[in-house]
Amino acid sequence: MYKSEFDKQFNNNQNYNAYMFYGVSDFLVESYSLKVAKKLAAGDDIIKVYFEEYNFDYCYDTLTQSSLFATSNILLIKINKKLPKKEVDKLIDACRLNPTSKVIFACLGEVDYKTMAKSFTTKTSSVEVRFFAPYDNEAISILGEMAREYGVQTDPNSLMFLYNMHQKNLSLCISDLSKLSILDEVVTSKTINNHCFGLGSVDIEEFLVKLLSKANINKDLYFILEEGINEIQLITRISAFIQQLFMINSYLKLHGVLNIKEIWGYNLPKNIANTQANLAIKYKKEQYLYMLNFLQDLELELKSSKIDDTNAYVQAKLRNFHQQ
Image (tube, rainbow, N blue to C red; front, side):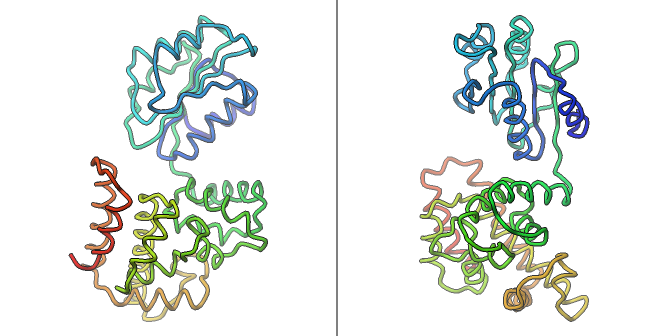
């Protein structure tokens, strides 16, 4: 089932014994899982089992037994790997045997969950909902709602700037909106540039400019990672910045004049636009390809290898960014 169809059913108060949410948008998977759980029960009555905590026997016993403290058992299982079909079928069937129980699977990550989804059918009063990357206007609408929830005064252009900055990752955008909510000012694209990644002592924009200018980044890099920024997020942010520069480079070669609004659909502060243009023309196509491959390989290493200290490893690799 697609999101639009599920939304209609949800708004018409149609309920199921079991729900499965999966797809390319982890934010939508998590938000819909929690939205459904909260509709079925009060927050304190939702039993949550996340990732390595998953244990089939515990989950099955929870669903087959009546709750001593609530009128229903709502079990929210968050996973990043496919579960055995037999276990999924039994957990769905447990909700049929005990009508007061409901189970919700929030399936995250780039995993093929299609075979698992086959267990969710109308015969078992269960539903699987697959999410795709939201259209830009839908994503900006979501970010607008979250901005209002956090009390952040901003505008669609600034939200689009934030969305593109994070390569259209809603989770990262919302994390930044939460941090920006402590500022007593209207949030613009300039504010976002100055205060992303933890509102700490290091300006991420200045760091990116230093990195691409081949300046000394040791101190900045140390503070950025020591402030608790996720290494994958930092690599993603650097990749997005380099892609921005490549687009500017390509546009300048075609048109000979800079027009940031035509490139991105929104304006940047003049000083930032000029800085990016000056950086963009310094690199050739082959160099852009090398840098993006370098970052892609680094991200793959972090996700697939057992590195004892990812923080130190990323610092060492980025310090050699232009030396390999």
